Amino acid sequence: MSIDYTERIPNNVDLAADRRLQRALEAWQPRYLDWWRTVGPEGFQDKDVYLRTAVSVGADGWAHFGHVKLPEYRWGIFLADPEPERRIHFGEHLGEPAWQEVPGEYRNGLRRLIVIQGDTEPASVEQQARLGATCPSLYDLRNLFQINVEEGRHLWPMVYLLHAHFGRDGREEADALLERRSGDADRPRVLGAFNEPTDDWLSFFMFTYFTDRDGKFQLEALSESAFDPLARTTRFMLREEAHHMSVGTFGVDRVVRRTCELMREHDTADVAGHGGIDLDTVQRYINLHYSLSLDLFGSELSSNAATYYAQGLKGRFHEASRADDHRLLEATVGVPALVDGDVGETQAPALTALNEMLREDYIANCEKGMQKWNASIAEAGVRFTLRLPHRAFNRQVGSFAGVRVSPEGRVVSQAEWDAGVGGWLPTARDREHVRSLMVPVVEPGRMAGWIAPPKQGVDGRPADFEYVRLK
Image (cartoon, rainbow, N blue to C red; front, side, top):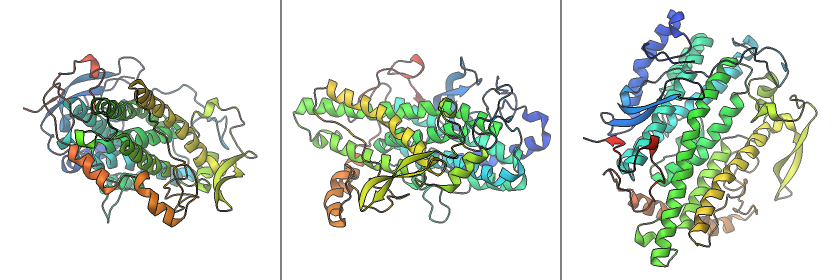
């Protein structure tokens, strides 16, 4: 389905056919632009940025690249192509036709899921608003803004669903999505990880690798929804989300490669004095952002998750490929838990353990990036292995909330935690050093000294391409 860019709001949902809905969204649009200019990327609103814009939702030729000023980016409402005669393939309504309208009895649950997902999109833009001032290169600056505009665009279809299917309540929720602020004590974002500051580029790369990856798995689960407009919305969002995660994957890899270069050049693992980020610090940042992202999946056992699944609102990762009855009424699974004071496992009904099952899929996916980073370290001839900490480490949600567990998965006393935490999580000294390296490099083709250049540019462009025109 092609996207109609002749409309004030680009879309492929035939918005013009519903004049009342179109007018409501056109009234919301200036509020969105005001939000973007107020709390979006600071200092670059008038600069031309080399961005991709969706021109269709098909598998081929879906994006156009060109320089555009950020506030002039054509945000809009894009849904994946409909699947003819799509049917529900899990829960109580297994085998029934997918819904094109919201069943009244599921209205509140669906609205809640849409609001939570929608809230994360502007939140990440707010978290990253000041990063442009410390960019390590124009290439990285462009990638930051590409993620920002796409996160902003991901808000639009959620607002469309709220306006189109939830009446007055939906319109009020859509307005509230622009009123909350990341980290605001009075009006915080819904999920805790989206209130944490992202004030340096190492944190940004970790966020795009770990937290955006959580977003991928949440979108995958929602893409299974019996509510077809939501499923089609998230399927297209996943196409753009893949780029966000790749920025994190290759960003951390470039940090690691540069660190190894400095280690060989100066024959030391302590590269801080040579303008680098040592591997121990990288590991501590991994521990922090991974544990924060694990919390986003919620408690190990959840009656809400069971209800959403049974009702057909939210499925599992790759639901259709799973070899079971897709109802889970009798199934049980092992769930991590605190057993007799140690990290262990208990059996639980699969329906209530859906959060943990999704977290399990996420953990396996996170390991792939670790393999890439460790391959770069090994290729450099450095003996060091980056690892994911145990899933019980540094948790604030679920069975291990507040339990002191080492990265290896051992329950420790408060005294042991206090003695070891400086080696497990970023210290004030770590943060201060990383921030000290955040000096902008904005000459085309140049790169900050703490990060290696990318192996290839964007859209086949050379390394010295002017990805952001600053003059």
